Length: 199
Image (cartoon, rainbow, N blue to C red; front, side, top):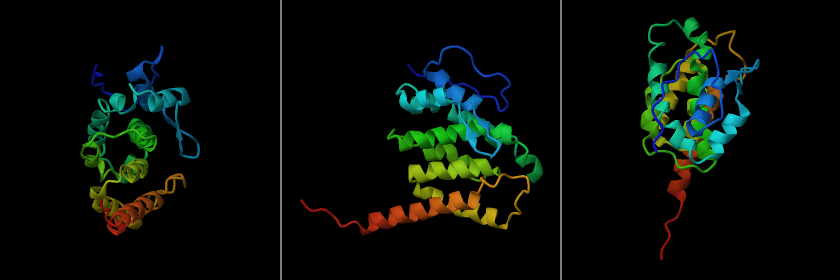
């Protein structure tokens, strides 16, 4: 049975209640994730473990929701100043939690949808550093060579953009994006150098 498409609000005042069901586990991750004082993600552990290890959750539970998060993330930032964008930390948390869950699902051996890059790529130029960091982490695990150009653009923009003094030191866009670029180069080089096998 296919999970219904659920609109996840950008600001959630009350967490979901009741027993976690396949779709509820993913929704709990998206709506209950918070920022720790150091700027790291503080995930609801039980819901995250269920979403990560229950086949009915995993990508099957995430994909009906992720496109809505991507669409919503493009809307509010179009007319905001850089300062206002950085103040929208709470607003991007559902999206960031979704990106991180997708990354961990791939790391756990789950097969991502073939069109996952096409789904998330509209936010390649998203200005929020948390989105940039976790998008780069997803691309590293997805091994998406088509992300090389957008990631390089992100690295250049980050290099020439003054750092927000209120931004936590853990939000190092250059480190995450640069590491992903190096990993993509290494993966392409390794494939090019792999000798052909003969029967």
